[in-house]
Length: 226
Image (cartoon, rainbow, N blue to C red):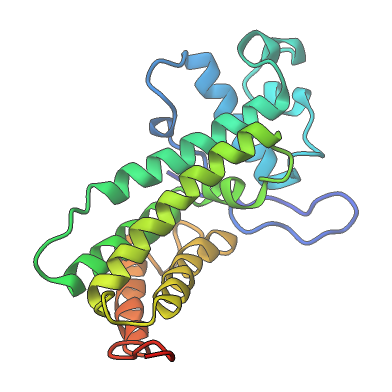
C-alpha cells in the first residue's frame, strides 16, 4: 500500500500528513462492494477536508458515481461518518480483545499497547477520522461511540492495574496512567505515515516499552487517604 501525499487545502492551510487508502477489511462483510468503496472514499475525504467541508459529490466522485448514488446506500452523510467511526472502533477493539491476559502482567500490558499502537499506525487515516470527526455525529450515534470508547478504557485500565497492583494502588493514578498510555497511541494518527522510518511493529514495540516505564511512576504508591 503506497502512501499518498496530499497538497495544501484551499485557503493556504498547510497540507495534511500522509493519507492512505483504508483497508476494505475495516468494513462489515455483509456490506456491498459499492458501499465499501463509498466508505473508503469518505475516509479520504473526511481526513483531507473534514466532514463539514466534504460534499456528497466529493465522496461519490472518487468511485465514479453520481452524487445521488450515495443515498442508495446511506440515508445521510452523517450516517456514512457513523459507519466509519463505528467500524474503526469495533475493529480496533477486536484486535485488543485477542490479547488475552496471561500470568505476567508486564507482558500483557506490552501486548495491549503494541496491538493498539500497531492498529492505529496501520489504519492511521481511518483512525484520524474516528478520533477527530466525532462532533458531527447525532446524539444517538455519539452515545454508541462513547460506549465503545469506554471499553477501550476498561481494557487499558485493567492492564495497567495488573502491573501496578491495582488492588492497593491509588485508583486515580491507575486511571490517569491508563488514559495517558491510550492518548499516546491515539495521538500518532496525526503524524504517522507508512513508508517512514517507523514501521507499525517497531512503533508498537517502542510504545510498549514506554508504557512499562511509565508504570514505574505509580508502582507501589498507595492512596493518599491510606
